[in-house]
Amino acid sequence: MDDGSAVLAAALMVDAAYDHAARGWPVFVLGDGKTPLPNCTRCRTADGTHDMETCVCLTCHGFYAATTDADRLAAVICAHPTGVLAVRTGAASGTVVVDVDPRSGGAATLAELLAAGLLPPTLTARTGSGGVHLYYAHPGGTIRSGAGALGPGVDVKADKGYVVVPPSRIGERAYVWADGGPDSVPVTTMPVALLDRLTTLPPAPRLTPPAASNPFAAPVDASGRLAGIVAAVLAARPGERNTVLNWGAYTASEMVRTGAANVEGVTGALADAATRIGLTDREAHATIRSGLRAGGVA
Image 1: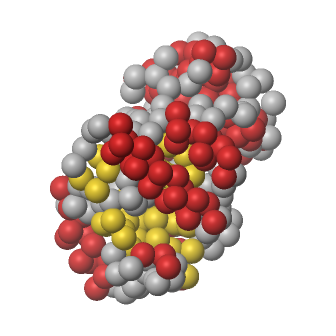
Image 2: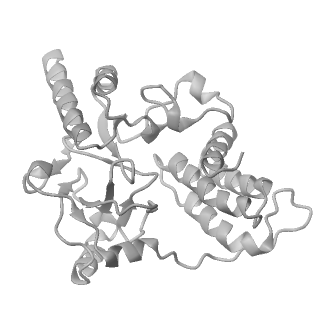
Image 3: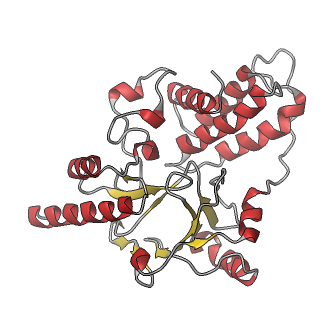
């Protein structure tokens, strides 16, 4: 790409970011290939008092850097003109996005969901991989993000999640709006049946009670719930690992607050899972501390 093309591409990115922000959608920038931009040295080496939600850095901590501020958006796009635009989903933007990936069985699952009346027509984007993003209005409360949350190949991007948005490109593959985009197609209210599906949790697997000598032992009555959270962390995909880990710590904070688990047990179990999926010990513990603090655990 020559200099003129690069300038034009950056200008189009800025315009698109402004449009998304004007809808109340916090925007941030990913690196080429949808990978989060690296944290700065200060954030990378920060201790547990560092709050990702209030960090003032332009690009650190993935979706925590999302903003609707025009000056910040222009600055980050000028600094990363070949980046990928993404929007923070969930209550932050008022959106829940159903992400259909036909490469993972999403076409068959989509057909089943449509037949069941769970996915009424709404604002839709076609993804760079040949899938679709269906945007629904966030109903309030907390809607969890999750891989395969609606079946094989159909993920949900809601609280603690994000989606790539048009007109982003991954290589030669572009994200585009279907049927005119948000200027002509509304974001549909989520049907009650879909909301029920997303807020009904499957039974969590039971963990074998840990040995008494294990310093990270959680009480047996909390083991099943903690096992489900750990399983979600272990299933996190590259680019979502910190997000899922933060969600896991936030979710587990309720068990700590109610006395169903101890903070050492939760921290140890989540840190072990995080390092098994490739996070550093420092990064894992910082993310866990942040999630626990957000859940009211000092």
